Length: 279
Ligand code: GUN
Image 1: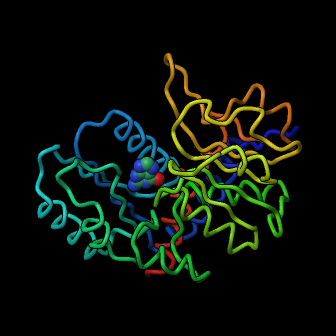
Image 2: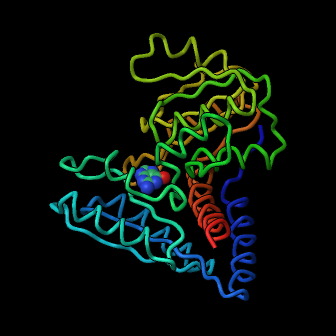
Image 3: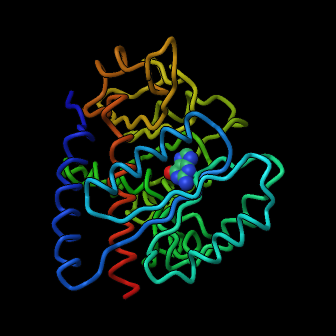
């Protein structure tokens, strides 16, 4: 069994991005990212702080617009429209989830697709599904980079994606399909989850349920990617029972130190891509 070390790869990518940012700066261009954070969700606050810190360390300019929980849709939209027009801002990210009274789709559709570094705009998601160049959501993009780093070719593999969210599961499945894997997508209404996971050469899990995937659900020699981040008794664990599943897997991502750090590295990469495309 080999560990897929997302921490190490993310540091390498961050160094590469940093170098490219320095080059852009010598040409008078400083990549800029605007982050919109609504409300007081502690996890979202932590993620946004991590993103801002990563930008700073890479030389990317970033600004966080913090808004109260009871803010109106119109005010969020006005801020996004301002960022769409701002030539110093290349990327715009709205941290999810948004409060219940806000229509998330309506908000995401206001972001200029050329600045949509999270790849959540239906324009980018549509292009991704057609196999065209687009902004790709950072977490699934990070998974693909990790597989590439370890020379894992997914072509022809039976892949099983557990979780069908717009930000992880669906784009993950699209990326794997674009790379010619045979993709099974499982979700909360899937009957007999084990019958799907057991057949998978590549199992990707992003649900948010600690220990959802146990050893008996995994094929011998499978590649196992754990996207879950769950806080249990002040410890961060994934969706996979790492201790037992790792005995069966050929490759596996740890939590923490697997996919998590890759997500932030991909955000930096996407912001750099936006800065290069736009100017
Ligand atoms: N909430 C959970 N994951 C993400 C992410 O990758 N981007 C944004 N904007 N919000 C999230």
